[in-house]
Image 1 (cartoon, rainbow, N blue to C red):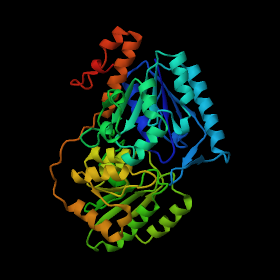
Image 2: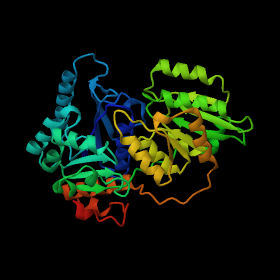
Image 3: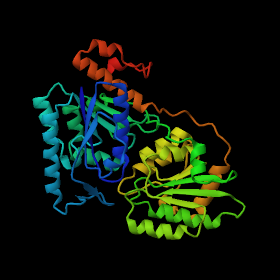
Image 4: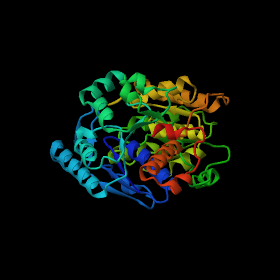
Length: 414
């Protein structure tokens, strides 16, 4: 059994990290499975990749802060790069012949680069289901609805896709209503819940020893995700340290992110020298170990980071990105209203406001917040397991499926 995964990439690490988490869970659930990932992410090689997963690296595209696309490294026209990527994807499908094709976010891919591929699948491999994966929030409805209408995404889902899996919950953001899905498209939506992040590789006590924390110190983890636009967050955090009373014991671990421009990281490292209880690193592929050990988190509000914070239940101050998409700010507002995080709009971010918000989070009593559904991975695996079993008529395989979500009537969704 074979699955092919398309992970669109234009900004940051979020998409590829999310898709790799899904792939790992699928491989654990289905011993006979092989997965081929096609992605332009320049960071794929930095992750620990499991057995039975391989990838095809597409030439990189880059999305600017205004949303425009360009070739990231080749220096050629963006149309040439898109054409090359499109033909590589089509060739991979024709030769790999996947049993399921899982597509991230855009029904036709970046700049319609998947259009030939989905048309080929319908014509040549009609038994291969197409599954679209959407995160909880794409952008503000005033932006998303015209974009989907312009690119005929509603029609693409209705014509080509078997199911739309949403890694979120309708209680926080119901994309069917917010984005005005036509009934034929809305019927294909399955809300899977948010993605619970797996525990880190290191015990919190080991992390605290590694960082040489004093017994009475609180650890603050600062992470701007991929880091391409994380300079201001870290710079403001470092400035806020000057406001901390001398009797308040804090140790800070700052993960800049691999996509932060080197010149920005150098400036931050020089500024951090004034604070001996600050450690700065470029990247870790085991962020959950440090988040579990931390007493509080300062971060952006990307999907993966939010899921990490929710998974460990840590106090957090989030400063969302607001360009080129409003997605993070919308998510941050909803979660702040429900009491999961404190949110600061980046236009109002100052050292004083950041320190005050962080102090409130550190000193806040444990409060009762509504339970949030974090069963995204097992629900996706259960759905795809059952889909493959039905497609292949593998009765013995089907009978051995793990009962990951007993209350989920998966059979009704196939």
